[in-house]
Length: 139
Image 1 (tube, rainbow, N blue to C red):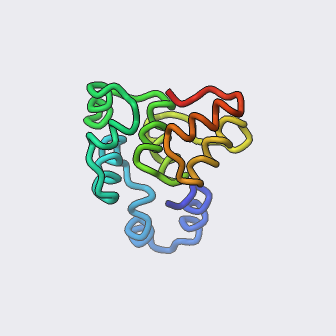
Image 2 (cartoon, helix red, strand yellow):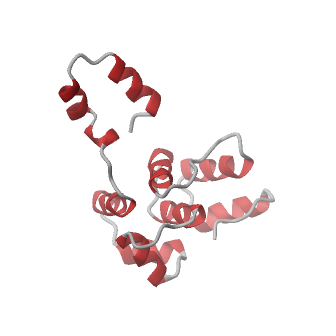
Image 3 (tube, helix red, strand yellow):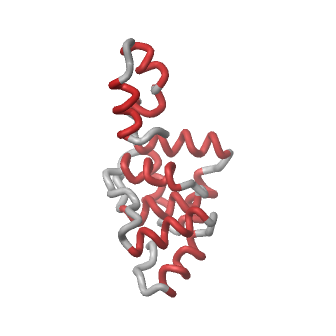
């Protein structure tokens, strides 16, 4: 996924709008949170029930997130990201689509979460690390 700055530079240098739109379809398409979650499940060969179990989110609420009827908190999105073993770009896209702030490395808690993501840690391991560092866990 290209950053906004990268897209802006490509757009500024484009002579053909249709080609720009075609070439950057995945980066500029309006996709909902539930559509993106479904896309990730399919790409990674995961089942909703497996992800929900790993996320420790209450089952009914989690299914409502997946069907688009609930807009989750930042912690719920992070729990889903860990349960799907997403990388930092995928996690930030999930956060953006849910209208939550992206991970910001200048914030200690976010730095710890980024570290855990980059180390492919589980949600439980990330929470242990957060707790050891004196930060609120992902609930």
